Amino acid sequence: MRRFLLACSIVLAAALWALVDPNAGVRTYRELDRQLEAAQQRAGALRHELEALEQEAERLQRDPLAIETAIREDLGLARPGEIIVRVESTPDSLREAAQGRARPRKRGSPRNP
Image 1 (cartoon, rainbow, N blue to C red):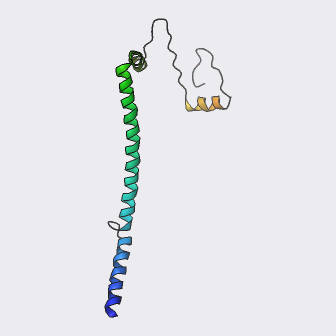
Image 2: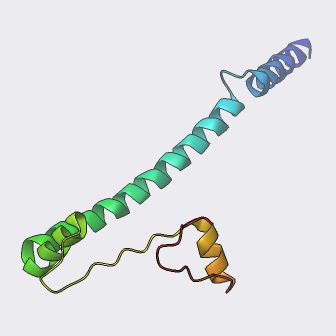
């Protein structure tokens, strides 16, 4: 009976040590499990991004119009007779526009009155 109690107390001490020790045991297992899950999510996102890039590369190899569009967007080029209009907005102006409070600016007036 004494050996049984000694064995149980050793097992209990080892279990408590595994719970408390920051370098081993249950805490480490849980942290590694969280890291593994995060890495798997990143890998999934990267797989989707890779798939999208492969589709774009295939489209650029097959479609001359896709090549032209990509080049024009990257370099900001226009065909003869086209006008490129760039709209830049600040978070404040977006919020005001969403709430219907956007004030039209007069031509030549400063951005921040």
